Image (cartoon, rainbow, N blue to C red; front, top):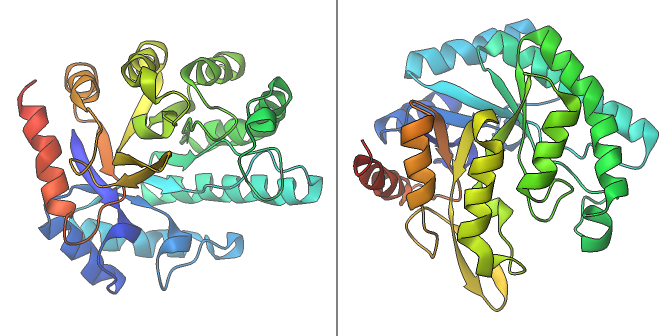
Length: 279
């Protein structure tokens, strides 16, 4: 695996210094969410070729790749005007990614309400799934034109909440430019933690060929809630995930989440230690 981290989890430094710092910590790529980086913007009108070239050169100088350009907006927003603006922003990010030399724009799959909040009955409904599929179709068509992958990230609290629903979305849209960000912890919830290994194996079996990016984090269960933290600091078992990555996805980019500047290196080394067992 080529390990990276979310740039907004790195030390808060000017961009060029931050990138050098990430590289010095032993990472090869980042997940870039422009709206979360101080001094940068993700406004549609600002996503010009010049801005893309500026960022591309900064990353090249640091020797880092952009694994994913994040744009985590609600594609199931019930307000039609707001939805059109959200779709426009996805298309702008896809176009921008093609100029950045970034192959993937990442997204989660939303909730059928304007606050992007979790309600199990509505989020997991068939009606919500139909809304998401209909709304993501034009975005995928634009991804095809840009030669960029739109990668959806199944999350238990969102519309595409399990591997079966993710497989249905992939099959019904049937585009090579729609793929999967595999975040195992995001598929878990106190509702299904007793089936953790089964859920992860099911995701690998159903989605494996379409997984283009992996996200890695840990969790602890406290007071009936899952709290996320850096790899190796909680209760997660990565064996099946790392074995899959090494055997089926050589050189896949895997970005660490929920790290802190003071533990990012040890989290990376923890995953690398597991990886050596399967190489």
